[in-house]
Image 1 (cartoon, one colour):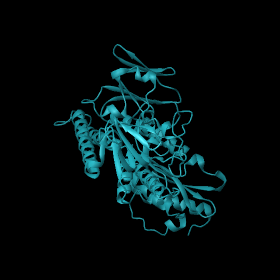
Image 2 (cartoon, helix red, strand yellow; image 1 turned 60 degrees about the horizontal axis):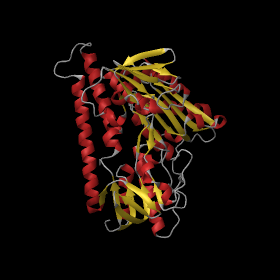
Image 3 (cartoon, helix red, strand yellow; image 1 turned 90 degrees about the horizontal axis):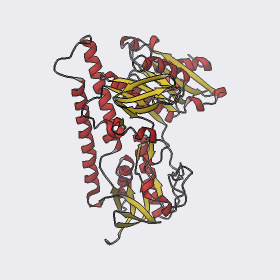
Image 4 (cartoon, helix red, strand yellow; image 1 turned 120 degrees about the vertical axis):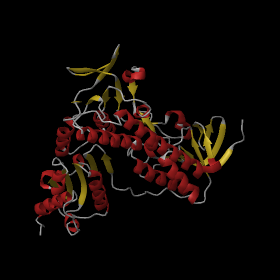
Length: 458
């Protein structure tokens, strides 16, 4: 056996959370060893948010081209060509992420699969590593129920979708969360026949009933959606038969978009003293990301409370600071978290900021509403179905959350997140400038609605 390597902190996983943790630890002057089983390149860059946005952009271009020529063949390009361009963009982004990891780690990068053998020690493919603290950032993988796994090579996940060299003729999308909706719309706009379904009566996790209704109206016109029933899939001689209740169709392939599950099984965390729940997931303090009283901290998708790239970056820092505190003999501090922000790039975008609608105290919340039909810029863009809903405390008018579906909604969501984190009120925000004509004037309209309800309108 190789000699045992020793370090202050072992960071297991080289994705977004692991990257920020490694940098935070080394910046503090502590020794860190970075471990990953490969391939390098973050989930975001390889199979997540970046390739999906590249495909959504390709779908937008193809839809626009088809609209301009009235559905006639487009000379010089094709949907498959735009798909190939999106895949090339993905490859460049993933390669860049991998190169940055190697450059940052230098000789402190150890490639292999880690597993705990006892508290304070792991095995990496036969190489023992001892550390005083551990940051586990091993990410997640798509959820694939056994019934779907039985489809074999006719099953796609987000880990395999972007490896296709050509677009399938038809796809059934099982699951209409953020990824299912984005990819269902993108494939449909690229000319693929798509049928999508979800056990829930909503899409993209929308909690606000008004925004949910608007989204179903808007997206239902271009993407058949079977909601409220479990979708079944069975391989046939000529494809896959999908069904939900009395509805059924045959498609070439099925995309499983049922969420992601943490990669923890191979780590053998129990050997490190980490308590596991009934589902085999580690029990983690949500405030410090520490697993019980151990020296193990979990960050990023491996702790599935906030499975988003910017949250993974924050959690990498929180976990690293917790590990550094242990090295200094201190109790890890409770770190403040940023306002929750989630955006679905569905064009129009769907976004949720702050406290979700279903967690608002109804008797002490005011909801301000703005419609695209009343916004000049939205009307010019043909986006009269835009809808913005802002939630504020009844007494103070302080913003606490928002939900929206809007063209360019990603920008509105950022403005709202900044305002909520700064504890701005409807009155204070109405003192800000609003340019005309702009979609941002919808925020002004919704804030005026709040002020009117509170009796503070000028």
